[in-house]
Length: 251
Image (cartoon, rainbow, N blue to C red; front, top):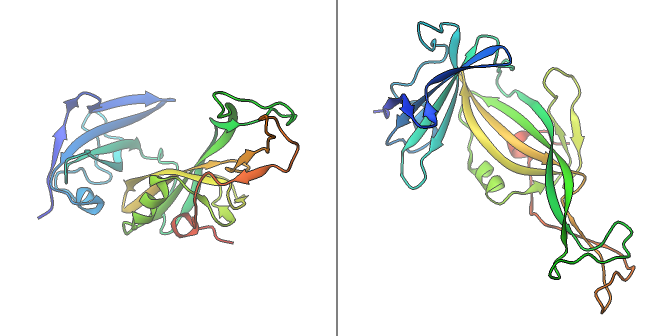
């Protein structure tokens, strides 16, 4: 028998609500699912609203559209299912089998440790370990659609210890455009993933971070710890992996 979903109406942050964002309504409901070994089980739990079900009689145009499960740490088979209700034309993407689309592209900031200033003549130290430097990266979100729940094991391996792409990739078209994005090996960092449900389709949202390079540049120094003017080294900070198997876009 499938597991059962129990409504959670007022449980702190996991509460039922309807909010207005940018002139559009969005609804959220939460359900507790027990004894569900994996994603397919929790998505098939009895008591979950069917795709397209209205939020309630007061908000009939808000339809159940996205299903996002969160496993409770340390408790086997216990999940919290978030169901998002959207207005009919608010999903942004019309699903189809095998669809791949980049839905957002935004700038984010991170830091890297550097050993010398931009002139390469002054060594920068903080307890002998360099100093942090603010750098910019682009965060991309790529959605992949399939009717069958994909194997998430490769995704867990990619995101458990984030990895960079080992080969050049062609990312899917940005939503609403016909222009794909080409990236070279080592420019994408796999930051994580989120499985959801949209109608009859399973959706995997991949979070990727894009930079010119994720290598650490180390400058040679002399016996006094000052830049020696030698050839800088590019050191690998992250392991590399094949992204084609999980997001497609091989050369």
